[in-house]
Length: 94
Image (cartoon, rainbow, N blue to C red; front, side, top):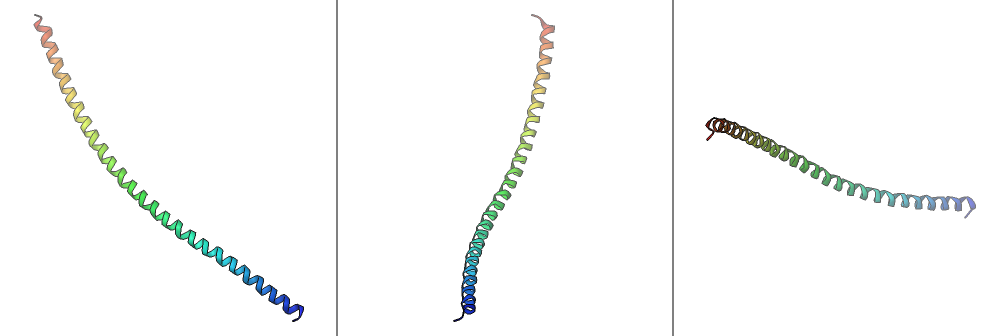
C-alpha cells in the first residue's frame, strides 16, 4: 500500500470515528430533549392547575367580601339600635 492510500485509509478511519462520536452525542441530545419535553409537560399541567386554584380562591374571596359587607351592615344596624337605647336611657334617668 502506498503512503497516499494509507493516508486515505487513516483519514476514513478518523472520519468514521468522529461520526460515531457525533452520533453518540446526538443520541444523548435527543434523549435529553425528550426528558425536557416530559418535564415541560408536567410544568404546563401544574401551571394550569395553579390557574384553576387561583380562580377558585378569587371566588372564595368574593364570597368572603360579601360576608364581610353583610356583617358590617349588621354591626351598623346594632350600633344604630344601641344609639337609640342610649338616647332612651338618657331621657329616662332613673
